[in-house]
Length: 174
Image 1 (cartoon, one colour):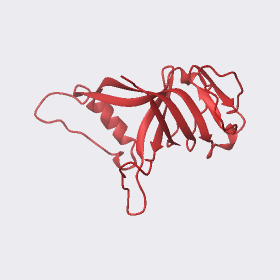
Image 2: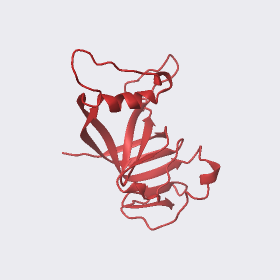
Image 3: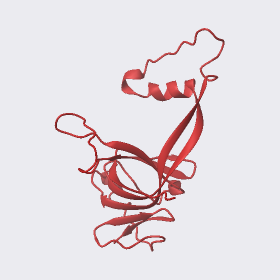
Image 4: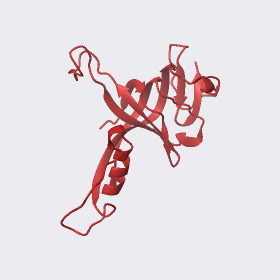
């Protein structure tokens, strides 16, 4: 069996950290030989996936919204349990749901006692190649470029590409 993934996409929201890991969300547009996912008559919709960088929360990797990346890694799934209260709190962060309220009837349970088993599928990055660093904030312009020897990195033929390696999370200039 094989569990390898290579995806190319654009970071669509600011990265977040959980414990020692860094997460970011990519939108990936399908190649023209794949079935279309229509947004409207003129455009195709993207597919979205979260990417996890194990140990990436140490601040040595700089990812920001708008970057175009190629991620090499593998797919993993995680099971977790979420309460209705947690779900509602997340929903309240949405523009249209700030005043959301839940009323549980026909039982004595509270929102933090109503639980559901959930599952998430994510790509775990082993190597990240920066294809385009567009939309970078001006204050981050100089901090994102660190030069260091690559662990696990294969040389790319395009010297303008920058590479990040999850085993040694510095940004590499080719």
